[in-house]
Length: 125
Picture 1 (cartoon, rainbow, N blue to C red):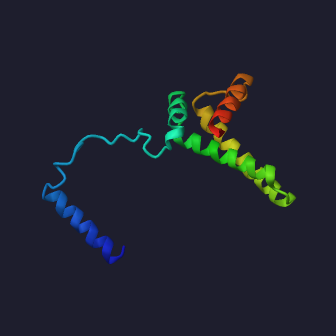
Picture 2 (picture 1 turned 60 degrees about the vertical axis):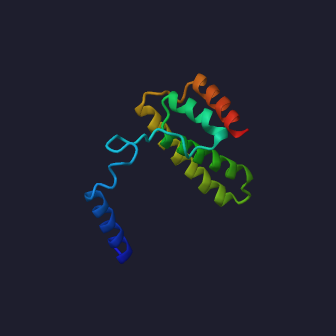
Picture 3 (picture 1 turned 90 degrees about the horizontal axis):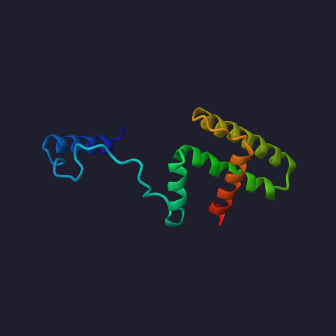
C-alpha cells in the first residue's frame, strides 16, 4: 500500500469516526445494486426484460461475449485464429449453459432458441 492510500484510508476513517457520513442520504440503508445506471438508454428496456426473465448481469455479459466472438469468427480469414475463436466460443457456451442450468432453464428447447434469436435481433438493431 503506498503513502497516498494510507493517508486516504486514515482520512476516511477519521471522517467516519467524527460522524461526517451520517448526514448522507441513504446512510445505514443497503445499496441498491439492481439499478441500471450503467446501461445505455437504448438498452434499458431490453436490460429490464432480461432481468425480469431471471437473467443476471453475468449471464448477459457472457452472452454479449459470445455474440462478439461469433462476429469475429464470421470475419476471420486465418484458419488457426478461427479455430482458437471457436474453442473460446465453445467454452463461453458451456459457461452460459451452466449458468442457466443452475436456474433450471432449458436452453436446448426450440422455443428457447427461437425466442433467443428474436431477442438478439432486437438487441443488435
